[in-house]
Length: 143
Image 1 (cartoon, rainbow, N blue to C red):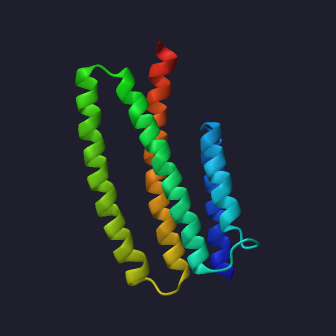
Image 2 (cartoon, rainbow, N blue to C red):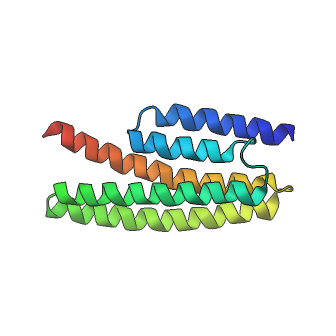
Image 3 (cartoon, rainbow, N blue to C red):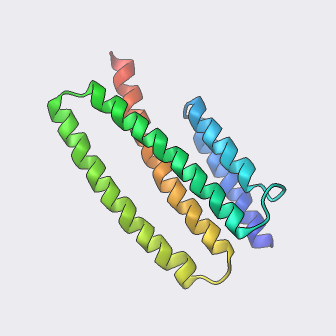
């Protein structure tokens, strides 16, 4: 129980610190994720995994939103580079998810690692959404 509480606390702090630099939608997703993962709200492994799945889906929506916004601003060469980069990122994501599935539930003992694995996957999608949002914001501020 102590390990789980400590990991949850570290996750919450890092999530809130990172989200301070992003827009209100990011804060909303992170806030919902954090509230859902609260030990007062959710005491089951499956419940916590579902929190992560929901957050990952919402981050994926943000990622797609900023991908489309970027595509609308870029010239044809930039669009092609973004398409290539995104395809390569999807390959990376898929391979990283495979590694996470092997490492955490496969090699580690205890159900808390299932939740941690789900959180790592969410963070990968969250980080990419933040990258695309940052690119978009940079272009928007420059115009």
